[in-house]
Length: 248
Image 1 (cartoon, rainbow, N blue to C red):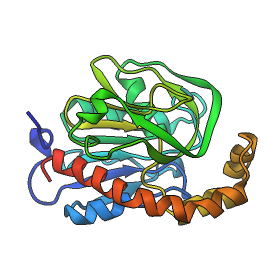
Image 2 (spheres, one colour):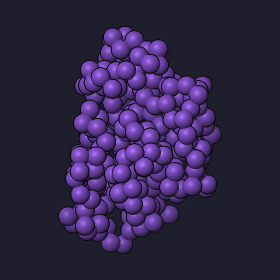
Image 3 (tube, rainbow, N blue to C red):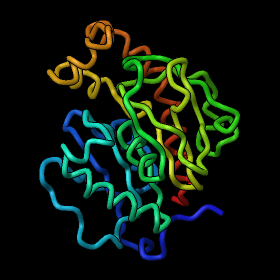
């Protein structure tokens, strides 16, 4: 049975907390789905020293975005301990959680899966294929495939216990998973816009990551408009399905 969230997260005045790790990455296309479903949200920038909420009751769900740090680097990035506490609290209280890239890895790690450095960086536009579970999934099932999506990662994860593997790529078996009814992790980016990709290309650290994967940043930017024209309606449908799955 699909649940909207824990008993203490219902009612008026609730909002979704968006955990952001870098200013270059934001909600992007996800913002459209939030507006469509009337979901209020607040960014929380723990890496900048912002404190987590003292009262978790108004938090209706979590969105955990990507970032340049690794899920297993809590000793280097102390804010990850706070973030893990928030995610764990959402998981144990039955709230919806959507993790993207780093966010997916953090969720997988908290669910008992190993997150580790992959053999090769996966960067730029490339396809993922839905698994049988993905094709039958209430969120991804009508997305079709293969899907040409944006990748920006060097780490990967094992499938968490009791989770369903929803998508794979030629490089990595794990590209998306569902745990329970309301917890989804996406290794790839459906939310990226041309603005976000432009910021990443212009930012020295992420540009170095892109070129280090053997990808030409200029070519990446040039092919983005055509790729987005294909991806935007799919992304909107997937995200709308997710919030519908959450009862919104």
